[in-house]
Length: 346
Ligand SMILES: *Cc1c(COP(=O)(O)O)cnc(C)c1O
Image (cartoon, rainbow, N blue to C red):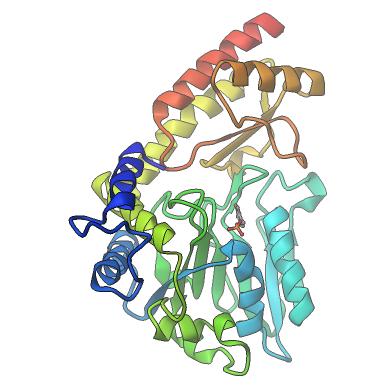
């Protein structure tokens, strides 16, 4: 999270504005907190240009709970849910849908350990919806644009790791969701942007908490919302607006990833793992090709102050996660450390 946001949150944790009561201690139905929630939603709408026929929901249970809520609400009998399987998170998403109805793998990049974004999809004839993961956090690949979908089938996106990192056209989506903890704030709150006709279409004979309708009708306050997460996410929306909005984030993120990919492209020691046309601007994955050397790099970089570079176990090697709030200087410093490591180890 941006330092400015953390500092403001620190103050308000003790007293929300002049109220003398901390943001987490206010009743979620009291005026001061309702104002916080309303402002967060208004800034979210402004930031992403969310049309009026969409609801903005602040839910709990993480992106992982959307994996089952989506099929529970939209996978009707006689229809098939199409999934683009481009990494571990998409696999987890389709696994939940399989428990609830018919599914189809419209495309997969598992044949090459998810190092690319497939170009073509084979959709089912009776598609209930199309689900994709815009950024594959673990494998460092990202869709450059939204996939085409069959007529009438809503596009549903797990955007947990690149949400609000670049401009997006909400009207292309039926539902877009993301856990806040990568680009939007603290863990514990999930942003769901959903078209109102889909809210209305969901079944009403499933538990209340699992219906989008319940949350939409109650402004995400059917039960106690994750108040601190919602508040802090609101601060992040403001921070993004103050820093050039989504265009500003896209510029900043492209400027950040470039020095790292440029260096990797000419390095004799490190190799990026994702195909060039599928690279993520959020998660940059790379290897030396030698596990011992990778381990040495991770431990030496950590000692030099670059923490969290160890890649996910399913890819190995290294991963630099450079979400919205990560400063460009951090990348510049990392590249200089890598150059130094290369000269000592080649
Ligand atoms: C981190 C992540 C998730 C899991 O989010 P939770 O909020 O922990 O459930 C899901 N999808 C993607 C793409 C992620 O990066």
